[in-house]
Image 1 (cartoon, rainbow, N blue to C red):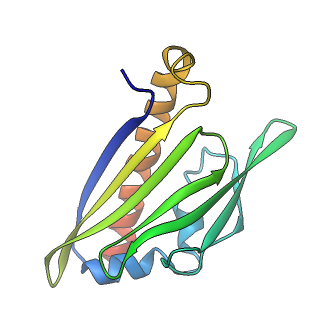
Image 2 (cartoon, rainbow, N blue to C red):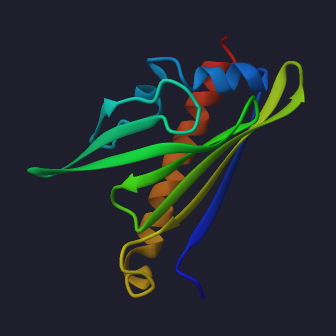
Length: 153
């Protein structure tokens, strides 16, 4: 069994795919997508979906911190963008945001997460379930916020 895992989260939203994609890059959006139980600070936000844009997050871990640097890649105009971890807590992380047009006023947001915990497969049996449930909880929150915010647009 491989160490790399894939999770897929989908959410129907009563707003156009174009509006939902644009919403992701409003200055206030990134802060709204960080769950309140996470001790994470936005150091630098990406300003658009295009390849090469970078975002930096500071994860506070007790008295220390870890910076998570992600760069956009795999951009397809009006359809998708992805964030690939350059530096951070995972051995591998690729988050693809896909915006499926269902009609002019409805879309489906698909978040596809490919990840690998550090030192896998050895650590997978010890922290794999914890990491998976943490990601699932985070994307449940993110989709609730995205749906609520975008349906108000």
